[in-house]
Length: 203
Ligand SMILES: Cc1cc2nc3c(=O)[nH]c(=O)nc-3n(C[C@H](O)[C@H](O)[C@H](O)COP(=O)(O)O)c2cc1C
Image (cartoon, protein in one colour):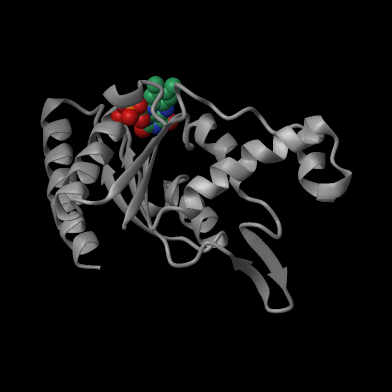
């Protein structure tokens, strides 16, 4: 059975524009995978705690030496990773906030990037341990950014690639540049979503 993990990061939850685009993809994916399972994670409603030295130390402590507090920290991270591992398709809804990804998404990444668990270093370089999964990322922005000014996509592609996940992006840009710009951009994104959903079903 195919499983899709949908992580939304808009501070508006399901009402966010990025969430609505991502949800539209999820709906189309479900139509093509009627028996498919969808797991939803809303980082606005349920944010991951910031990484601290204590939390990071828990990751780096041998399992048999962990205190009960450290075990709880690792169990939380393990649960997020198990959720990710259980999915073959990952969907991310990602608005641009202050030229970056939402801080909730950045913090979530801190819990799923675990040496020896989701990536490892080898003599040939880093190796992602979540290979075989594909992410579809729905990005929304008020402004328009050329490749040189895009501070989100290279980062997201690099992070996901680092843990072994290939990624595809759909943009809705210029959403704050007037009604015509917003309408055109959302229309283009929706057309791309229909194409991507068809490809995801064929895969
Ligand atoms: C706190 C905050 C910061 C923002 N920063 C930017 C920004 O740096 N660049 C930009 O183009 N748009 C920025 N925006 C606009 C959002 O990217 C845009 O409204 C987007 O559609 C929001 O997606 P959402 O509805 O899924 O949250 C910002 C919006 C908020 C609420």
